[in-house]
Image 1 (spheres, rainbow, N blue to C red):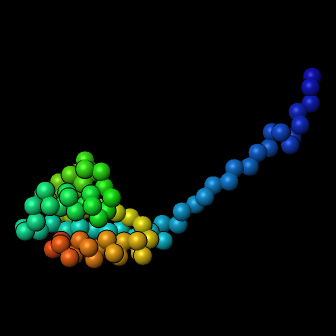
Image 2 (image 1 turned 120 degrees about the vertical axis):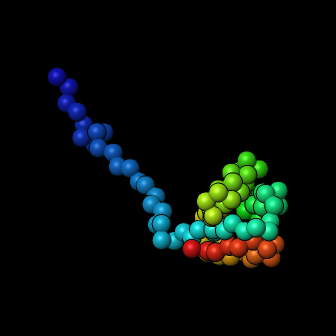
Image 3 (image 1 turned 90 degrees about the vertical axis):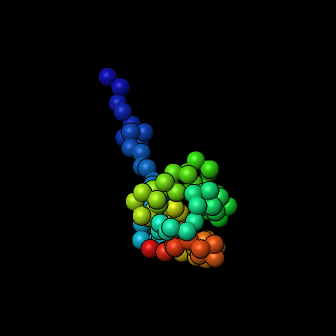
Length: 94
């Protein structure tokens, strides 16, 4: 019976852990002023969404009152929030 080398059997896995507290959410709120087309266009341009993703977010914003459209570091979300605010959207970084 062959002997097993314990060094071969023992392997360690390293995992990078992302701390959730370091991430913020860019939330867009529903309003009665901006069109679906405008919101979709701005999410594509400003938040780097794919058109289908932007459309899904616009639908969620309309029917639920809000949607988290982007997550990330505060310094990344701040200029995006400002750009959306400049276009008349109601946004908040949470």
